[in-house]
Length: 245
Length: 245
DNA sequence: TATGGTTGTCTATATCAATAGACATTTCGA
DNA sequence: TCGAAATGTCTATTGATATAGACAACCATA
Image 1 (cartoon, rainbow over the protein chains, first blue to last red):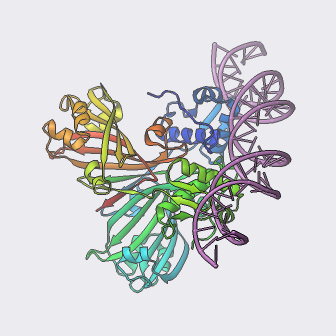
Image 2: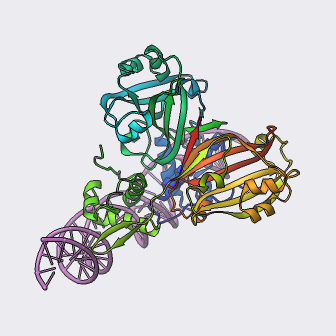
Image 3: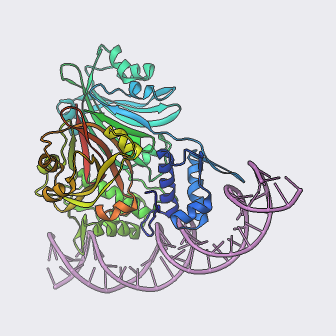
């Protein structure tokens, strides 16, 4: 089954990047778990049907990402191997969902603003276009690795001060609690995938061409009243979603 | 908000491909819906900060995909603009889920085999490793455009003949019905994203570097007995998932 | 300590990707 | 019917990507 790993030429994606992507994926798969090492450069070159130098470019990129570490004379060691599982259920919460898989989770508030609701935001929050909303730009880490960057909107009237509360607690759930919303539920989630935008690359410590899993989500209170609409961008090679029905 | 659309150099992904990806995305967004055309090449070159020839390479790639059509003297017209919505619920079915958004859906059986369950397949289907399973390789179209390619496994004993039934009905639901399973439910779905493997490129009519949304799903009968485990690869620029809780 | 297997470095060459500029061709409206 | 605006084509040049071969440096172990 694990036959030739093919790559294609003249596609606008350099061979070394295609190979880097496949090796990263294989590491995530656990393909090399037995040895804890990537196969020798000459073997990889043969498998992919390219020159050894091309493989070296790919491994250099992975080393740059901190995924592997080459040791002269020994081989190329795997440094990290992770794919966090993010459950999407009616009770989806970031911190609680990731929490048991990471020793430490953090939530960083990058930006906060009050603005008029766009058509899209208004539709999701059940507001009129132009009504006031609070927008938070947040970056979430697990064990010091960035996992997702999210843009969230909240009805401004009901959730005044949520930025400050988030900054304090580093959690939406706790920020809601401080503002008097003890519980909420996930109503809808839309999932797509796309290449990372430049603005997200640095924050998520990604290289261009990297893939994002994008979740557009709407949370309501227990009466079904929308309380949050968010667009979260997850580094696709670090996360998978699980939907239990 | 719609400021400079940036692209990055020396990343292993050619500028023309990055630009093609962003334009394809913008078309899907409805960014150019007013005119039904992509902005002039000179304007795009300015927006992306590249030479006009580089933009032309990007547009040529999109024309090759059938997404745009350039007309000398007029401009570059948008041919297709679509992102099918695929709901993931307890009652997820491909044909019914996509059916109302497309005039015609098809399901093609690419390959069929009986084999021993791998560790992963056995775990999902609640079998012992090495027990017999039937594997189907299917390709699903909507309006003659390939949407997803899926590998499915079924317990061999209970679902003997499912390949033939699928070939006849072009639907898993109907194939199940013919074999006496009137109803089933989606138990679990895992969603990830990755670059398309070479083996899937041609079938899904994608170019290398394209993104797949990958759904690993397990269906059970009404007694909770696993009846199907599948790994579906969706062309990410043609599909989004919706999860309603 | 000698040897095989591995990564590191260097030179050279060919092809692809991107820029630059000039001009042709087509469409559409003033 | 003229001209502005748009795409199409051509030549030339530079830098990134990929191949090829050779050899050095290092590690583990027989």
